[in-house]
Length: 181
Image (tube, rainbow, N blue to C red):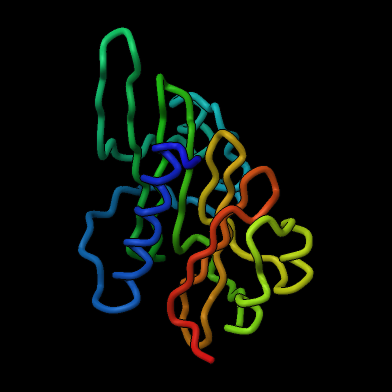
């Protein structure tokens, strides 16, 4: 079963990727110090706000959403973004611990996938098997509970439009856009 943080993060990534392939997205730049793909990858889940700020070169990001249910939980979504280079990072914290992270645009490399390769990927397939079929992809999202979403590029598109989500190292969900036979 998908956790709420996973669903929110995944939808934010998909929405941004889908709209960024057409008209430019209007958003305010929130980054004074640029973030790298390696910093994103190396940011451990369960990090505190202070650890996140330290990992991202002293940049605390912009709080995009906060909610607090006294005695139960508090949720904070922190955004980092830049227009040059164009990227965004969204971090979700629950009770001041990082529970999910998502990004788009930090990794400028291309990770191509064809419609035939996508068709060969089945639910329950291991991540190692998928990687042997289509190669390494770009990590676009990770959440507690073992969810990891990897992005690939449809031919001719700069940003990932094909997403494979793993749960505990096995294909849990696959979504594509832009693939043609």
